[in-house]
Length: 85
Image (cartoon, rainbow, N blue to C red):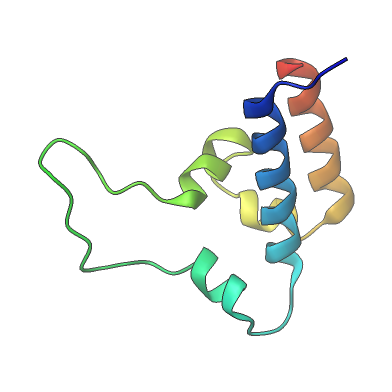
């Protein structure tokens, strides 16, 4: 059985975001994930797309706090996988 590439990518991205959210150091991956580009300009009609928006749509607006609790985050990802799966 083959996995859907888009679904697999989404699952991996969500798992990676949880990993980054639980880090306690100042690595560049954490900095770039939560960086807010104030001077970003996009064409009219298209808001700036940010990686965390995808997390907010999948997990909820407080995804970062949920990800800090590994068991809760895994449960949410499992529920998401069952819904999409």
